[in-house]
Amino acid sequence: MSQKREDIFASISNKSSDTEFFSPVPKGYVKGKTKYVVVLGTVMSGLGKGIFSSCVAKLMQDKGLKVSPVKLEGYLNMDSGTLNPFRHGEVFVLDDGMECDMDLGTYERMLNLDLSKQNFSTNGQVFSSVLKTERGGGYLGRDVQVIPHVTGEVKRKLRVLARDSEADVVFVEIGGTAGDLENAFYIEAMRELANEEGDSNCCFVALTYILAPQTLGEQKSKAAQLGIRELLQKGIQPSIIACRCEEEVTEQVREKISLFSNVPFSNVFSMHDSKSIYLIPAMLRDSGVDFSIIKMLGIEDKIDLRKERSEWEKWCDFTDRVTKDHKNEVTIGITGKYISVRDSYASISNAIEHCEAWLGCKVNVEWIEVTDITPENTEAALRGVDGIIVPGGFGVRGTEGKIECIRYAREHDLPYLGLCLGFQMAVIEYARNVCGIKDANSSEIAPNCGSAVINLLPEQKKIEGLGGNMRLGGRDVEIKKDTLAYKLFGDEQTARLRFRHRYEVDPEYIEQLQNAGLVFSGKAPNHPIMQILELPEHPYFIGTQAHPCLTSRPLNPSPMFLGLIVAAMKHKYPGIYPEDVSTLVKKAVRK
Figure (cartoon, rainbow, N blue to C red):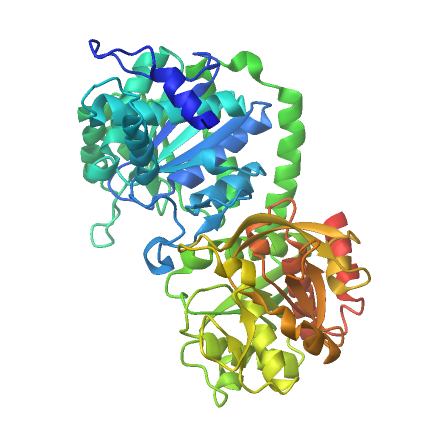
């Protein structure tokens, strides 16, 4: 029996069919050792619950507290892997391979932590676990119900996370809003958890939205009041309310919210729009949200003020760079097919912002739809950009447009960074136009093509199921010495990158591609699986099967993105930056 199943049965085996009390407590869990901050939304989704939660968690982490976040999603999918970016934004991949919500990326960047599958759950995961337990006779003949069994499973998951992470505070973000049917049992589970854990062990935070219609010229709080009333009706009394709005929420509006929600005025905060999400921790710190929560949870004695001063100084150094007006600027084209939903490329946008701060250069992003790009209009589409990124994606649509963008970048010395599909399309472009393999393609795009330079490897073809044969999560990459990749990664022969793809360079064509000048500077250890490519004679032409944007952090930006922006600066200002790309990247990181 797996450890997870042992945990489940150990936690419920003492619950007989003649009792209504059902609250699974995993072996080794100590009540009160870990505190819980539960963040819920009202009025509408997309208010920034993940941003608020991660920012407050960062403030507590800076104070020496150990924190662990978890996102509870209301959809029935087992993970986010099959979700269309148009509907749900970017799929973020954790190091252990879990495909999850983009909020997990916000947590990793803010907290500088590598999270795991324990930090993400869906209705599908919860129901699946409940049904497996029922099939194994784990509920001792009880009729299995949402209450107490489904809510019990939610509480068990949180307690396992608290035990395994040894966190002082677990931040629980519930997706959607208080009125959504699909997350109702999550909210009920949180009510039960607060009751069971006892006083001072749970804190509820409600994010709400303050309307400000231009025609009225004032902020209106009625929708927020009704949303908070929805929570009160479900038995949740918020301890703190964060009010979202474009402009700072007025004192009068916050007084109204306080009056109708039973929350002291001092705990009703404005969380208005900011130039960058990285400035929000300072906004919340100045308002005192972090200390309000610490006081409610009774953990003042765990604060390390000396550590806080040191960590905050590092963070402020970064945010000072974010707010600084940069003298130089470049334009980077992102050539994708999901550009109508910018959240589809959230990690790329964040990685670029990290580089802006460290390089002191403003980066203007030009979103370029590739579906209609042809050889005849490629030059016009890329006119004015100083570098391009070809991001990942699945399916046939837009691939020929991406190939044309890559051809143009290669032939015109335009700095280029290919990510995942961008790596594969670069191989196809090079095979067609340099190696002379005119029918080169990917078996994903053209299953019957004559030369599938991108293909499923033999061992992958044996694995069935969508996602089953994908390379997912963190992998060590063996870096070839004296290459651009080697220099970018600090003269290290191994780099840790994250992957989410299915198709690889077919080993049959590797030698032919290399003989024609393509350098595979990164590969899987002990396997002929190519993971980084580059062109030595090009100012900056590099691609990777990985998604380096997933591991870019504010205080530790992605070397491959730094290299692209530096190359774009050299492209636009050739006389100002005479040094080579890798030297300028190293200088920026040492600042």
